[in-house]
Image 1 (tube, rainbow, N blue to C red):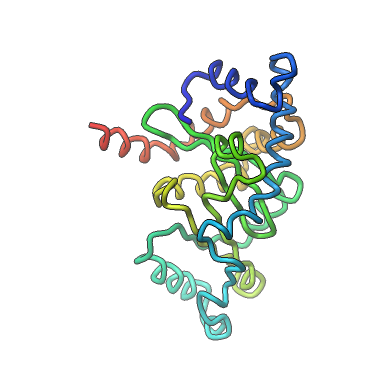
Image 2 (cartoon, helix red, strand yellow):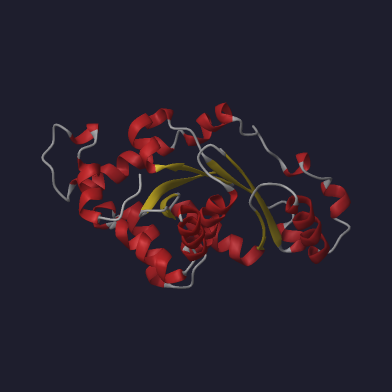
Length: 242
């Protein structure tokens, strides 16, 4: 679902089956967000049916005891070298930044990201489930409800946080819906919205979770465009189009 016209987008939202018996109006947006939050609770349960790894632990990736002898910088290099040849998203997050993200996720566990498409944007809903962050397209939730499966999972590993000051992250995605560049764009938005020092940016996350009636979908797109995070992806899509 690519959207460039906010009025048309809101109109489509209001026509969802949950609200067919209710009068159409902007006030329904808050009810819709609450409905989205209820349905995203099932994301973690559905993902294992889509080829994702169940209980993807850090020890399943490498020997934790062995790397404990390494410095944080050495572990970072090992992590990056390991995933460099793999078709996935990965990162090494400083402990301070992860703590900020994690603390904010406790009170605001759900959010919306905007993924640039050739024409407009597609929205993805993120839901924290422990240290896993599950994403699925908004249209997937609209059409499949609680049966909507995760299309991207970010796995965060804080096992080395206290001793080494880093948190390791990697991901799995459903490649029928997302490529690596698109998954990276979504992952970057986690830090954009949850790890920001800018009050207005994190304020969108708070509004989505705590004051859904006030939330404006186009504010997410405006923030993404201001950050420049989606510019490279948008450029490559336009080049592929031509």
